[in-house]
Image (tube, rainbow, N blue to C red; front, side, top):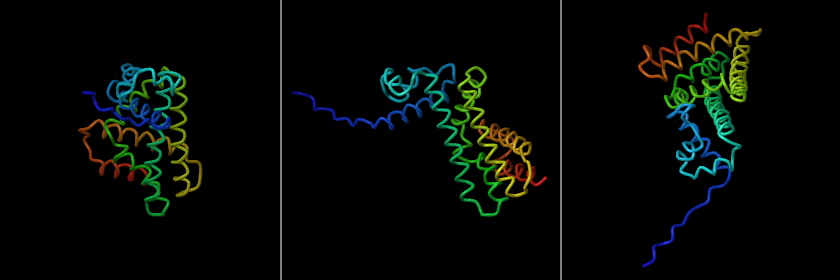
Length: 194
């Protein structure tokens, strides 16, 4: 008796590349930068290890693409919060700030992946460059929202707010923070009002 033929659907190249990026993010979250390899990414994606090199020049290229994708996801969540906010400039600014304290940004897996990127930013020039771009874009968006509330040069205000949000986000995402997301939002709003 012959076994039934197993049918399969070939994924489109963009879909396969995206599944490898998402698998890389999961590997970074589970294993950190030092434990992420071509093999761990392909195991997460359920594909043979040779497939990664079809879409990326190597592990460094895959990690860089994953950092860009992760940064884009965070920015999309921030932009979505601003779009959903009331039209007053202050409301839009506050929405941008406090979006980091709720899903999909306040997420332990995202934090674990982000920590891997942060660790690589000190040793990998391509990741350091991406890190600088992602944070520059975040601060530029924040500066625009601040300027809509009060015209002027708000570079240092944006840097301070970024540090405040990063610290609160880090504590919330680690779990067991001594404050709630609502309290983090209130702290950001209070700092903004001063």
